[in-house]
Image (cartoon, rainbow, N blue to C red):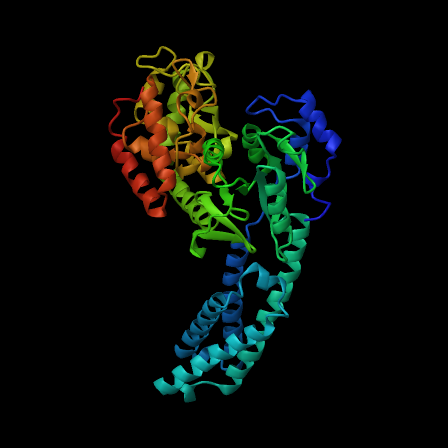
Length: 511
């Protein structure tokens, strides 16, 4: 990192001004001015290195295959379509990508220096053609291929692969400079241990970690306000709000394993965030097997929590949402049309009701529902939950709430991305149980928001839907939601989606 990092732009005086009392340090959500200014620098999302290298694999496979097919069409002609040519082209392209992967040529460190790895690239490409030639010899089909086509594909394919890497090298360096592709990290802890950790990370030649600041519960006497040029921005409770604003990817807890009580106390607060949490093992005397660690360069880390549904899993889940949301909208469009007409005829007011609810990372989102209450009695904050025979609910409203038809507009939420089709059900921002917010009832309640909320969920199909009139109900919902997050898969999503219509036939708790 260099001195242009936003986290390093703030003076010691600015940090001390906050610590002397210019901000509310005891508030869970209130950030001081310095921390908020730093966080605002990181509001935009970044590209994951895993996603970049993954997309490159697909692009390279397509590029090699299209090159082979284009040369085949030019030299041999598509009029003489022979199944062996497409098979060799696709097979050769796939083998090449697999060998590149096994040789770590898709690692960001290799993509940064394509000239250094050009020899390995050429060697693997030669190896692919050697395997193709060997296969053709044993199958006795080598005489069926155009030598000129094979030689042309060899030369053109290598030029394209090497050229693609030159372009990627330039793009990766530019993305690293402007912050488009980086992993944003916050150091939890301070003092000499944190400084040693930061220096070790900064010495890594291909470091993609951007340190955004430090948070520590200790005062200035035990933890200085600036460590290795980075300011201490607040305490661990304030870190939760900072991480949500700044789109943090990783928390590095820089405390010795022997400080068990402090480590556990911090993790109890931090696990609700949708981030990777790593415990630095750089300065610990305890040593485990190498496979116990993950590494940032050569710096060992103990993996405590991983961000759920990340990278390619998130791509697969988003594709799942788009496809099935469109299917749902098409299938239920007649029902939605009839419902809209019935609502309009039954009572005055809009057809669609928008309600503020907690979404991913605790952000507020607008969730769409068919209006089921009289307009002048509606409760957008859901402070007063709907009960049996509630006079605020219209005649049509009773039916659509009982059958969950009022939830159908949320297919559009899922299509546009504020909701997922399957996930923890989003609750209204002021939803309460016995005059207490849900977060006050359930320890770790906000851990539900580590993933995007859903139109339906594991808790709902297991009977935990409808009115929450006891603390036990919100605790059980949260327990089922956390189970879903820890055990997510596309098959699990599909199972929940298919079971939802069946389980909704039980309308006992729906008012």
